[in-house]
Length: 140
Ligand code: ADP
Ligand code: MG
Image 1 (cartoon, rainbow, N blue to C red):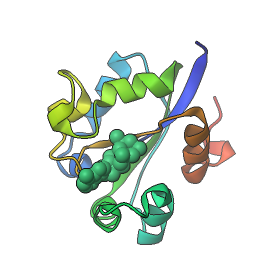
Image 2: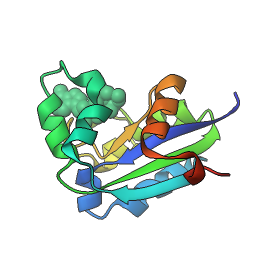
Image 3: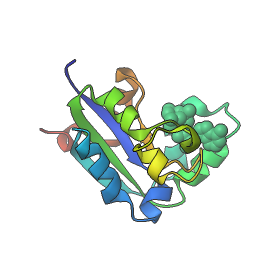
């Protein structure tokens, strides 16, 4: 498996509770390297566009409102098999189902306020990185 890049968001419930460093430590312990990072406040239009894939789901409005409730930290993570590795470190969407030691098991509050987003495939990783980062921010 080659070196990959994936896209990550440290979500509002986590930034609000000052857990950014603890979550980044989990990525680093798993062999993922932060190669781009910024703390931003999403607009509603940006949250809606980012989560457009979920627009027919019953939780879409709640999800978008939540994602703009506090700043988020958007990041590009790099490493061996980074897309799957990140999903593994994140744990299941619902923290009640997440494995011991995962970010969501340790930090998530609920299925909605679940502390992190991570890309689920190479195509979405590429799209999501491009949504938030320009080429000049991705050097090295
Ligand atoms: P994941 O983030 O694990 O890839 P999904 O892509 O299915 O999960 O959902 C995107 C996000 O929508 C979740 O991380 C969570 O914040 C929110 N979400 C998912 N399911 C629910 C639900 N049943 N109720 C409220 N929010 C949800
Ligand atoms: Mg998803």
